[in-house]
Image (cartoon, rainbow, N blue to C red; front, side, top):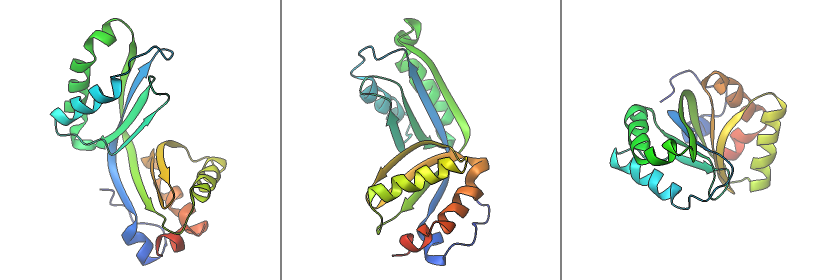
Length: 169
């Protein structure tokens, strides 16, 4: 877990917000050549080492993807994925497998917000120069993977944009 002090947001919002240190793993592919079982094989390889995919984002059904997993699993997950994708790496169907450990997962329960409001908030973060590396969103909440160095600014933006009140609903 992230242990830096949170900016001044409501106590209820701070309690409902989840901030977790994670690892972001990427599987980069060339084009969109068909590898229909990539997602299933990836998740099974992670499951074999006990690593849960906390967030998964794909560029297309058969293309590149990235996953946020608990940080302690970074090395065992990469080893498992290299073993599973060895043939694809050799044939250059998978170009690169990478990991970043300088990231955080923010889970924002936003029960009073629509998906459009969550998207508008993400647009405002981008306009402020804050990069969301990957995300999953839905009406009622969002999970954002951001660089650790941006955490205080993102949390401050939550407060400034009024999302603290929405999280307290």
